[in-house]
Length: 46
Image (cartoon, rainbow, N blue to C red; front, side, top):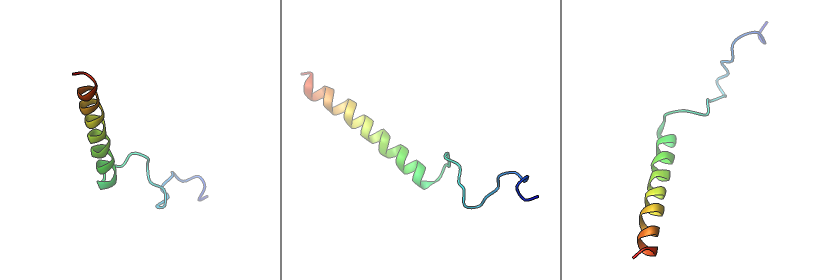
């Protein structure tokens, strides 16, 4: 029975993969948060 085998489909990727795309997204979010919370309060609060 092929349906009873563990899920090893090659076309499916786990949602958490440490690759260049995930790293780029993480770095992009980090820079966005730094800019958002670093520049905005600095420009609003004298």
